[in-house]
Length: 422
Image (cartoon, rainbow, N blue to C red; front, top):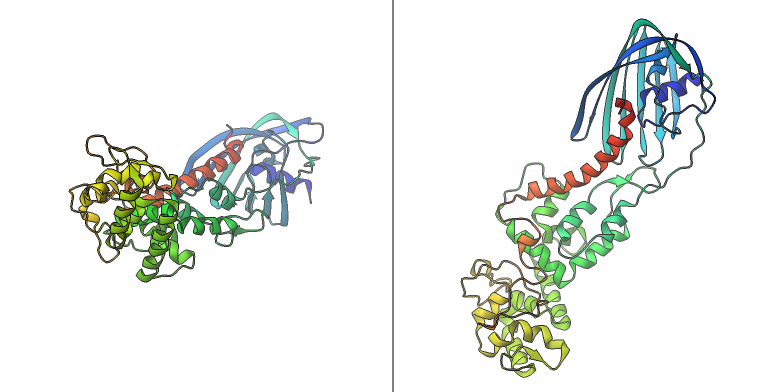
């Protein structure tokens, strides 16, 4: 590779990490005025103009930044008729790949660069004009970039899985459907084939996960389908149905009902009686009432000698003992507006409560005055997973994408910091 081609690479400063490996020598120079601008996904920087000194006859060197070792290499170099182009790849904390094209004509030069860093596309343009003033410059003609070891690209799918919990499954599912740099650095990938997605699908098939997804889907039930809605946005708008599709568990209402039945059986085994009452009171209420009368004791029927029934007694014992079905259903998170006999949801909820999500029965606290437990259990309604009922699914998806984009953008800003002289 010609030394000036390396200089052109550094001149653009796209990672602001160019340095001189050999001793610097002062040589006669000439001043150049440079104007640069950059655009990226959801972000732009205004034009920045600076004056720099370059060795006579080497205007591209005026843009060199001396802020650390180079981590970039070039390939596919072409140079003819004052035009230069090449591909580049940078390693380090902000891996980047892209293409550069530049052209010099007399006292002016201009160029542009397209780059991709962690899924974010960046475009930069520059123009330069010779001012004709003499100055003293540094000679970079013998510049040789040091060898830099490659830095592993983070496994984004695994990072999402590590932070996953059953109270924010819709957001996790939407994030897992995105595109990310593959850990081997050879391209982009989705997480569907990753172990992280298997963990997500396992969480979907738990009472807590099912209740969380169902609550958000019900909150967004009347939202219109936006034009051009993508897979990630659908996951936020209809997370239960979309999760079942993505996990290969079915794609229709029968699939939802089948999984709901399995989750009711699982909830009975792990003591999540709020889930049982919320999703299957039509068939399970009588049995749960009989169990409470048998297992719950004490003046308020909130004690249980068998730990298996401790949550049942603490949250529903008093109301079940009185056969106060409306009070039981309200404690289970039911409100009249959610009653759905076809799916067995909140059947018999005749109170005017405003619950909108299954109380899994994890709360051990009951109100002393009425003996009815608080209705804020582990999956305490759609508000816990999807902001407010007025929020749109599209906005929720955009917010999640913006959160990820901002993280990537911050890295992009740092990578291009030297370009603008900061």
